[in-house]
Image (cartoon, rainbow over all chains, first blue to last red; front, side, top):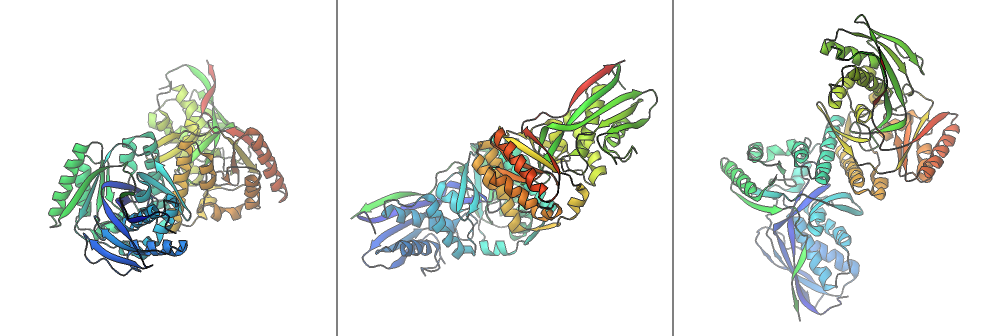
Length: 316
Length: 316
């Protein structure tokens, strides 16, 4: 039942950077300067309709194929709601950018729906529903975008079924997120990954992960710099983005603590101690991409951004 | 040059529990109630001789095969010392027990030798030499016994070449270390391990490791209980120890936070919140081993034991 007489609710959900080099499928953080808005408007019938999609072409209006509508439908069905919704999506996140666009749409939709119900669902319950959107988008219910998108900040996802996550005490450093104008579907970027790794690689990547988590808790940027290295996934995906290693290197040479793919790419993230340095890094990365005739956008953000939230409510 | 007029030095090095379930080759802690003593006595010539080995039969007197003499010879050669030593070993750690016996002998020998020189070598430098002992003992220079043995406490080994380690803030809990009277050579226990693992296993074990490290920093024993699970190595080695899963289960049923192999086994460790509970756990594990007609010894210790140290100095 809709318990409150609302006409429409708009929610914002941030872009997210998943993996953070050492935590494939288990680490991610939210970006506060870019994201998706979803507006739900109550209908008199019980239909769910995608009314408008702004900011991106080629996103499906078929409600069984769009992550926002899929999760709304699933939650409406499970709660046996006798209400329908028009959905308006305002995408700030490009398709196939590695910035958690599919998650942001489903999370924003769920947060808006939860507001209609006076927020009976916990964030963990919303995360459970958002995973159905990920399944539609890339074939797997991975939670490394969903969780930071919903909860904000830097998140360790210990389990995705059931969702169990821990907010990590991220340092006050700055993230450059740069999006080269290429499209890389998460499903494709997952399909190229080898299903097996060597025990030796596992040991080394485990040490890197442990160095990262320890660096986070000790607030030791030397540890972060030394151990936030992906020896498993990044080498397999680098070939998908022209100039990847050059752009990464230019970030590190310009003082970045770490640089790697954001999620499955093609976007990269880089971390820096100061905002000023982050601006220099972003500029250099963008120039480097231009050597490959690739245009890009970038954002500079803290690591302690808040998660998805309601931005507008209309009664009526 | 021997810079001080000493006749003999004795050093103690503790037993160690490597891996801690989730950190194959990268985690370990020291045990304060058991270990090896090594006495070095200066010789007038430049020979290195193993004079006596107490507490264990079958350890080689050949100085190229015994870990204590191998590392002494290596360090003497590198420093071009014009002194020889008689070595006496008093082994408190059984051979092939999974309690870091080979490390303890080489570490105690190196700490004693360093004392002769007025301690010019750092612990990291001693660790470098101790790795040569590991190579003799099991064919690989892994540092997960060496580092906690030298430094004490619970250690994260981020790199073994060069040695880089971090002392973890281990909680004030108790460790049961139980040694069934079986012998399992580390080399054999390593040789049975699959050289490949699946990416899926890697992801799950990474989440477990991250949960463990986070649990340690947050002092959250629920996290430790839930995530200190080895899904990669333990299942492959369990078959080497009759009753392994029964003994592990009885520990968990008796309130252990975690139980798994100590190092490559056959010993097991279990962690408990209280000393009293640790005693109950140890007793139950011992009884369970007896159902398989396997006798055992056990020790109960804290996790913040100190590392190797000099115990006696004779001038003359």
